Amino acid sequence: MNKTIVGIDWSREAHQVNVYNESGQTLTKFAIAHTKAGFERLAQKLLKIDSDPTNCLVAIETQHNQLVDHLLGQGYCVYVIAPSIVKGNRSRQSHAGAKTDDKDA
Image (cartoon, rainbow, N blue to C red; front, side, top):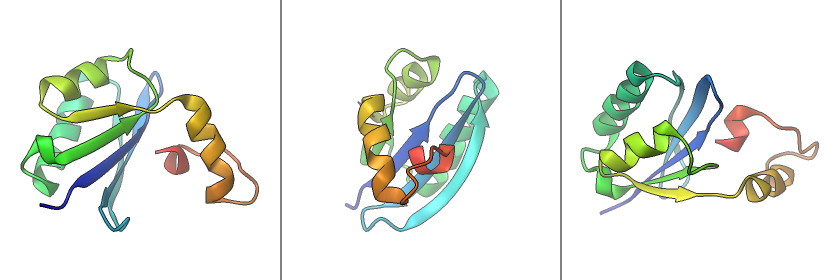
């Protein structure tokens, strides 16, 4: 079965979420609040795309976050990506290498 890839650029108040298929095609992009309601909205949206949380690979820049705890509790496979790796990847996304939540997600 094809995997669903979820990239999350987190912050204290809101998180940018980008969802892709294995080919790298964008399935959806959206933002959620850093609240229980925001976490539930994320889970609902992801379940509509892929009904099996274990089939989703989630990448996020931190492991110390309530969002990570929520995703793990829902059965998602979460990969913590060091912020330095995300920053280093920016130059591959654009020549300016400017930070945007969308690109970081």
